[in-house]
Image (cartoon, rainbow, N blue to C red; front, side, top):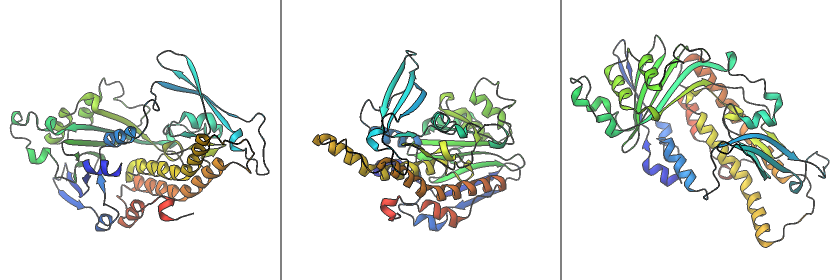
Length: 379
């Protein structure tokens, strides 16, 4: 998987900032210490990562068009132990969901349920009623709107000859490994472009100071028109970038965060990623921390699932009661391993959101040096 993703990724070199009012241009190179971590820091197209991951999953496992309705953990006839845990063979989770196409209810059972369904997690709302108070107004609204999208090199270069030399290839295509960012410091707006693969580019733009629940442009028909309206005073190169992107390639997000939840597990169910620690994008670490969660959770569960699979294949599944839940113990261990690191990154991200600072290189070095417990040896 790593080799497949790295084969198309672009090594990160730094950022070129253009102040749209003063005309000042500054280049900030990637801190040298980051280059010594593993293979270095890379920019990768998220859809390539998604495709690579989905290719590793057997056909029929991923299903779309399902709406989660309810979750129940079967405890009837279960033997509880001194610590209150259930034996794994007694803890069965039933998930009820509705098919969007047929409107029919369907059910599946499992022994482990992972809620990786984002900041507005349905799994969290169903399993953790104590967190239903989380709202997405006021406190959790970061008053920031972000747009991102994918543009092909061909689209970026189309029409340059018809723009009266206001833009040229050198401006349109950022130097390999660098982010080309245009910034309005008075209104805290930014529009940035970078290369993700050989012929693929990505833009990210941010508009701050917006009340996401009552934005004046919410009635606007398309995301592309919103981009034009928010960045109409930016240089011609930004207008060209916006013109080049297809409407269905633009993703729009209102930005919120939530406090890191104090509990991520219940029975043999667990929350990971934004469902339990959605954070400000100021450090660009929300997605990375979610991927760390997935890797560490896999490391904790792999030996257990391999043992279950081995026993099932050999036909030696036993109904002998175990002393407590092996799965629950693994989930609790995962939470303990992740909690301190996640809280620190979350807190630092909030700090830089407020201060508009870009982060200390030594902190970033610590962030990018993370290894899962089976490599680092951390118990």
